[in-house]
Amino acid sequence: MEIKQIKYFLTVVEAGSIGKAAQKLDVGASAISQQISKLEQELSIRLLQRNAFGVTPTPAGLAFLKHSQLILRQINFAVDAAHSARLSGHVSLGFPPTIMALLGIPLMKLMSERYPDIRLEIVETLSGNLIQSINARQLDLAIIFTNEIDKQWSIEPLVREQMYLMARKEVLEEYGLAECIKSGIIQSQQIGDIPLVLPRQRHSLRKLLEHKIGQLNVVYEIDGLRLLMDSLIHLDLASVRPGSACLPEYQPQLELLKVVEPEIERINYLVSLAEEELSPAALAAKSAIRACVRELIQNQSWPCAENIF
Image 1 (cartoon, rainbow, N blue to C red):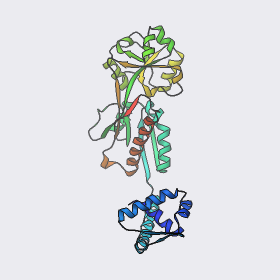
Image 2 (image 1 turned 180 degrees about the horizontal axis):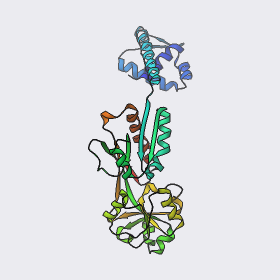
Image 3 (image 1 turned 90 degrees about the horizontal axis):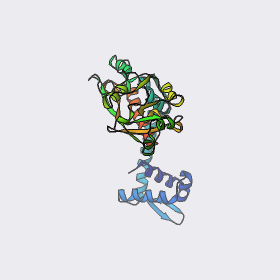
Image 4 (image 1 turned 45 degrees about the vertical axis):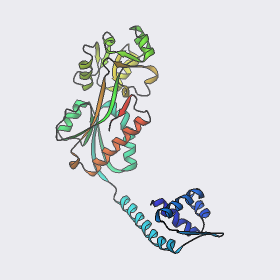
């Protein structure tokens, strides 16, 4: 039995006909008729008597009507109670720059719609700095790129991202990579001589690349996402980044070549205090983060990624 069926039944009885109820509810008459028929089948009893003038409740329908009105009244009370007891509180969140660029505004919008009384403190910094803040218990939630974290914390895989070589087309052609542009892939050993701009060595991405690829021709070290990506537009440089780093304003000007042999991927982890330590506000924010990530990936607004939760 569904609440919708009860509402339809009550409206039909009040209106005296399915047609008038359909107008009142702005629903097709056939849809109302089908739902009431399903309700009668589930209850194995006739609730409405159809006649030339409309419909009237049967004795069983009258009995059902009385209790249905009580049920809907209690549901309305429950909704009012939920609205009057909205979640409130303070939640501190930490995101790396690439994640902030994608997730920041969508998460703020979703939180303001769902939980307007929760106040967010959002910190943008490198994954390594976030780990320090996490271990110092200065954050409630964070997204980081390593699972090497204190065991007192809850950690779950969130997103898997593939690594891409990014550069302007003419830069890639200068280094004999025209075929790679056509295929959209590049072998890791072909990256060796290309001048790269990458984050500093303390950055988890830099450590991952040097572990997977080996020696790299790094000519600039830049941690800031915007400056790093702008350097690819204005200088003859390339970078190896997750697809999410190539924000919409950069995409028309850059080629992305998927790195293979080995294929390199990065896992984004959602970390938090242990579930039993999280406030209701923090639990709500954690749920909102998952919802935002899922929607961004489904809408292809988080390129070259897949959710793994």
